[in-house]
Length: 216
Image (cartoon, rainbow, N blue to C red; front, side, top):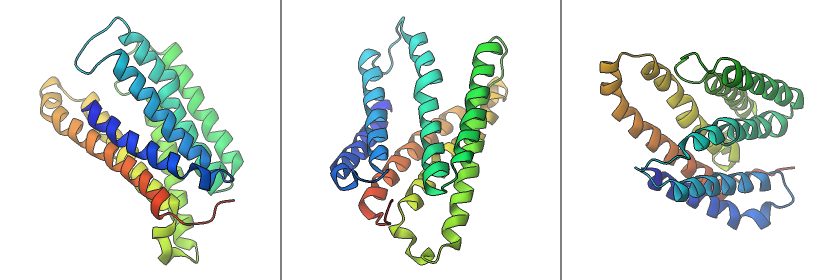
């Protein structure tokens, strides 16, 4: 399944690279580079630890994604939404500070406690969902509402909701369920996780292809 997701990440990164020159004078160039980074990091770890295998590096992989791979995703989207699309830099600094604080507290001081799904992921998803709602409100109030298909953020919004918001509640339920319920719900969750993740990267690709809103 990791290879399937990697294929969609590659497609999004490739489309982003193809549009990079066109976007090099806008902040959207960083979205292209972000997608390329996500693909390269996941490709690297798949090469190092092939799917279905175990390695002495497993702990290092978990540590990398905990302190680098996952935080970069949240912090990048905090920047894209709050600082750029919504033009509220203070919101970006505030949300980033809260997220980093929870990350450090839960991973450094509360690591020995079984909290189920990492608190920093729950907090990150909650903050990101808040920004998505604010972005949707902005789009609805915009005079170009009927031209939503030309708005890059429309595709990104939809993808973020499908994956981040869609998987977080299910993760919480499964993490806190009994062993029997976990066995019943784990397989459908994995399929939803994969499908929503793939759809998100398809929508990211679509944001380059059909998104025509001017960017400053």
